[in-house]
Image (cartoon, rainbow, N blue to C red; front, side, top):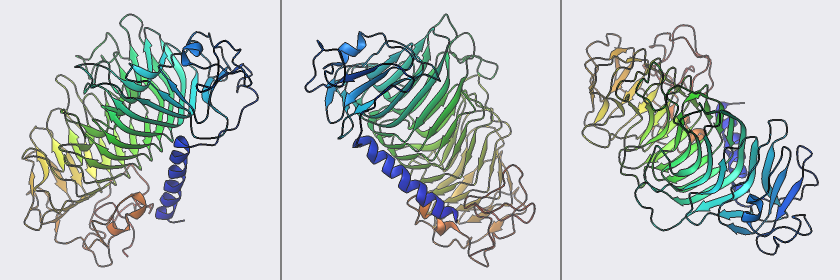
Length: 510
């Protein structure tokens, strides 16, 4: 099956799941997943004086909050109802016997409305939880400076390592928190490791098939107060506690006030098949569609990032990262460009790889930003190869205001008909193709002229990227050089051992 067909199938599946998060028919369960007790809540017709059974459900979230839950227990909210206030349950499950929060009955997903509280769902110092088939909001009066609001907030403080958290088919929307990133971030779905005395982190976070919309400032993220290590010596906390086993996939984020997806302190996190459409819509800070911070071996692949307002940048190689990889992604119409590279003071990022991505109509948002912007040092061993950058309205393609020498190999750079520029006195350029962009003097194997793309500028999703195939006779065919490390190109074609094409396509030509 062609990769475009596979992606279309995945996209249809994701769309169906996200619709299900907003209106899912739910049938009653007869027993909790781990053999524990069921507690039923009907916020329209229940009574807190009852036993919390299916026939005599409780009425309020406050009643749930007074119950000490145990491994294997389940809390079920009646479909089609709205519960107001904060759900802040007590008790932890285990990976084998998690506590589950979901729905019962038939109808739309039950709604938890936090009404402007710190969080609508607040999992504080608990672990072993699974949430699914819910709708969560937390709108209130305009927030004051530093006022935190979150839809789903998992906070561990001086807890140690919290294990097993799953969130699926949940819709989080309308959370108007402060424009603050850390500490106390506001946003849609937030995991935070805090405290100051007991090193604290997470192991096992799965966020799949959710919809997040109109939230401030972060869409989905992991955060930590335990950041200090050799490549981030000025980070908060007294030590580094990794957040492991993180998977974020098939989520759709729209109208995000600040950053879309953030991974802090991650080790081996996987961020795949997500769609971000609209971010940096209200924040006064710089914001990124997807990025990692103080993290190792973070993989971002098969994502779509579009509509970054102002200087919203699709991706970033941020501070204190080791081995961040961006591959097989589509970015388009981001005002701050495709990628921004910058460390915090005193930190080092290294071994970044940016390969086989397509950037369409990403535009530098000021005289300073370009499609690819390098600001802060050091960023050693960063390689950008086999990407297709189609930027017919951007004045700047690469802008390096630091001293880091990034290696650019086998990339297609298409600039404005009136001409675009690469301002990078330190970069190492080899075997790139330049259209409407003067080739840097060091690229002795440069190809200039039109790459003969099939239909550039026509991609609206990963499933509609065939416009970036190379046509037969393209000067980019076979004009690249071998770059090891990956077996497939953006379209699923095998990468040859030699005779590589320039750009994200390695096929024979259309």
